[in-house]
Length: 485
Ligand SMILES: Cc1cc2nc3c(=O)[nH]c(=O)nc-3n(C[C@H](O)[C@H](O)[C@H](O)COP(=O)(O)O)c2cc1C
Image (cartoon, rainbow, N blue to C red; front, side, top):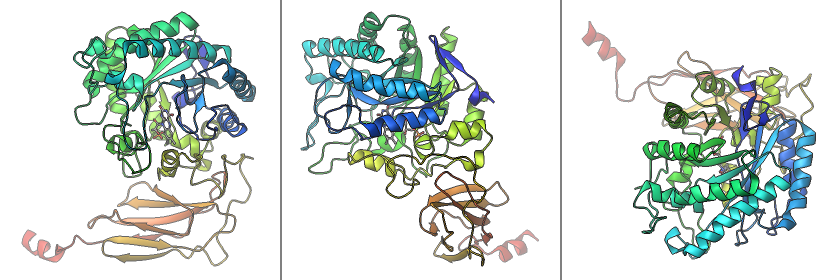
């Protein structure tokens, strides 16, 4: 299985092809030190055998930002070192921090843009990236990742809407790439060539006037020329289309570009892989063999395996899927796919991040701050009451309402749907024994059943199934039969 094959990235031996990309947890204080909760969160991924753990964005400078990790001063090294040691003790997972510079934002909605920076400001940023990289190496991290994505400083220089007019400006691609080039030079001066340095950047900005995969191919080529050791691709997450809530600072994931970055349940699986594949092929044709990593709804093991097996990317990044179940890789290795807690892309985690509240998963037990410890398969997963699940269906006005009986011990329920005679797939994970499907269409036959799951994803037997076979509104099949005859 390709997912479980190791990969070596500039000497860093990553035990499998699964990365947990950076995901802020909002578990640090405003002081930016590693807390026990943060450390526990990342150790949990290591226990679950995730190949490459990217620790959430940590600031290389001292600007205010609410709860966010920091690597802007030597005083943060001991806390980071301790966390890295615990991660390394837990398994052979590798761990890198994502290091970030961001510009100022205010509650009024005002935000600093790259054209407001002086050349001295730019020199300071270049220096701060180098120093932060050196601290990461000292803390024992296996490498670093430069945050050159979303709404943050480096990505705003690379952006097509960079409004500068000087040599760091938006008029040419070379100018837009000048800062990241100088940052890479600075980082290499501090950490040397033998320390893995990955770069996260956007394969599409998903904003009006922003760049698309056409620029992203060239940007990727430049990153490869600069000696990036891996390219981790994201999309969107920009301020340009962010929605401003009065009294709050802008959240870069609140507009459409944010929706693309963390695509919700209505988006297809693996939706951004084609961009990553195009970038990988383009760079390869130019003679560079830099590992390319895609993110975005890749938590279905069969889908992730197919993407890797087809050679589209070198690793898969799974964020929300691994938040839901940090034991995803371990369960895969043990052939316990049925036990994976399957992310339903409800985006409660995204909303918590936007509100600067501790990021948890909706599918975890109520009040849990971490995914529950896994004790392996259980003899008795949640069972329906003796009288059965009592799955009942009510249809009205083009929607399907399901309800069923509670199963003792269930933490959540997976709702499965079959469309016509296809494979059953999970349409939602819910905490209460009710579900409404508003996305059904006349002329398609549906069948539903429900499974009750415990906190570790151990699912009980399926409920009885119920069917729905809606007609096309206003269409009379009998009349069609007559005209066909
Ligand atoms: C709560 C949350 C926080 C995130 N924080 C970061 C971050 O700090 N840096 C980053 O590059 N991406 C961040 N992301 C984006 C993810 O790394 C990932 O690209 C995105 O969620 C799509 O992958 P997925 O479909 O597997 O969740 C965050 C996503 C979520 C849900």
